[in-house]
Length: 147
Image (cartoon, rainbow, N blue to C red; front, side, top):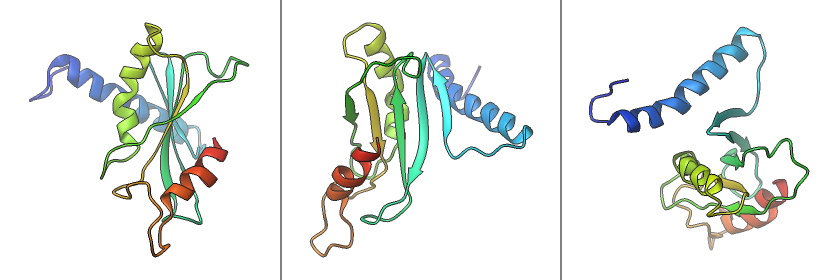
């Protein structure tokens, strides 16, 4: 596959999740079903994109959840990693890091875990002094318990 400005490996990496998403959406729409969460399987891990409502921050809050291979078939408990993106970022930072986690899990340089990334923009993950947005409280009191 050729994309100007990209190496074949990079183009494949960038387009594979998009094509998988497109095929998933087409299959769902073709079947007349509507799903609230989009799941994309890449290199055996599963990436789910979802949203949740909040009383503490502007809602809905998009987030991504990455689960290791065989997560759904296991009764094992997994640690939870809250992967916080940099300023101005969003849940796509986890989408972009999925290959890193897959490699780390396959080579056993990192333990299998569930990874969650909320889209928090430039919030600095803090509770605003005026109380308008309470990101730290959201992470601890709403997001983590929901996971």
